[in-house]
Length: 156
Image (cartoon, rainbow, N blue to C red):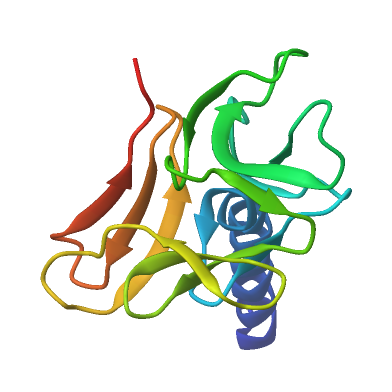
């Protein structure tokens, strides 16, 4: 017979194990409202679960302090871009940011916090739950009611 204390300890151990297993998936797979990336040398990105694709600022070869907000293949040595933001003026400067905001947009800002580009909005006006870089190469913004998704789609 298992005592109440042992049963509580076992339940806590199982819950902790489940959270420990799920934590890396959440950290790598989902982007929470308010999260930002910065155009700098750290080259931080939001990656797909399988790490095949990365969304973030990619340095532009031969152009010091210039970056491209883009989706690219992350596991091959050559930087292969499959999508980029702000097609009319895609270059951004060091210190630019991209942020997922509650109203349903990804917003690209220059170092002086001026808006340069916004993604399409989740269509029904509902609040954003999260965003995610998918294993397909698409970056999606998901509404809280999960019936609407905005998508940054990679080219084929």
